[in-house]
Length: 127
Image (cartoon, rainbow, N blue to C red; front, side, top):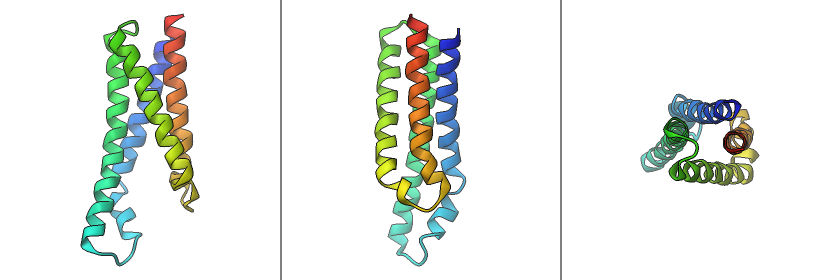
């Protein structure tokens, strides 16, 4: 039971962080100042893509938890989602963490915490 709760919490944090990426997109783009229209579109696209990707990871983990923790597909989803979140944490650590804006500094922590919750939740559930 506690394992499944950890899986859902890890999924929820990932979804919420993804949604949180969508709201400030316009102000983030404005923060780049006077840049070309193409660059504005690229930044907008990338910002939205990260938010949507995070939401997808969270939803697929939650879905796999609902389907059943013991299914081979669920195990693959938990493992691959956690690996992806760790990869995003590492990328964020070497890029966004250097930016003087708190949410960027939180990304590696949030991604790592979500991955840890998913892995620990899965391990506890299968023990």
